[in-house]
Length: 93
Image (cartoon, rainbow, N blue to C red):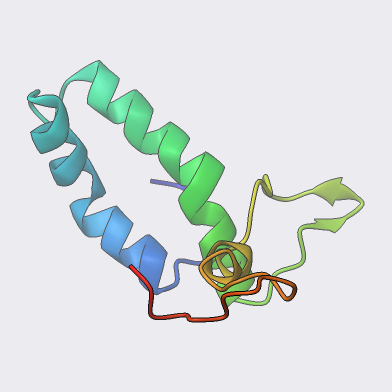
């Protein structure tokens, strides 16, 4: 694909295996237009952000270069207890 953001580890894995995994999950051939559309949309709305952050690319120098819906750091932080949580055990579960 002609993506403009340099691929990092997440993007490389997605580039090589993403459509195969999506096709398997959907029970469709890789060539199916739904698989192709989902593959592109998932990269644009999720994986590209991870690649850009990993590569130190700013989201905007004027016009935003990629969509920012969340960050991997924010997702990992949600796994930790809140600072005021009486139970600070991080190994629960």
